[in-house]
Length: 212
Image (cartoon, rainbow, N blue to C red; front, side, top):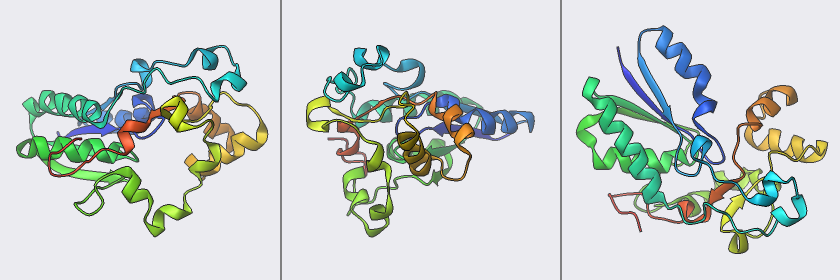
């Protein structure tokens, strides 16, 4: 059996890996997906989001604004060490999860079988964080900005609203995050998304073991 550790991306959670984890386990492998700090079962939500007050949501400070990339890296590394008791681990990161798996792999390289970036941020010395990577020509085709709400300088987060049922907003979300599935399927996945990605996660250094 092989060991797989899955790390989700922006606004997502461990639950989004359920399908692939289930298939790997049925094949006899060990597979686990984590909720990064502030995500999934670790999420903390703006009160306006819970009240469906979408006007206030645009400016309410995020309760997860204090989470940094180091917190993502620590959570990933902790789970990596735990799983490595059964053998070396294949790390799989999606989107912003690429930053976390990079740091975990650098912290514990002897525990790694391989590192897989699934449409993920893969930082290098010249492009050490998500901000720098997003500035590449490839990043200019992203349309995720169309679903962002509020001012990150005020909220402390890159914020989306998975509860907004406006057809136009839903379609933008589908195109930005799940453009190869139907609207009905997208809504099933969106229901498990978190509204906030802490701003501090994207601007921190994610190479050479440094997290600033």
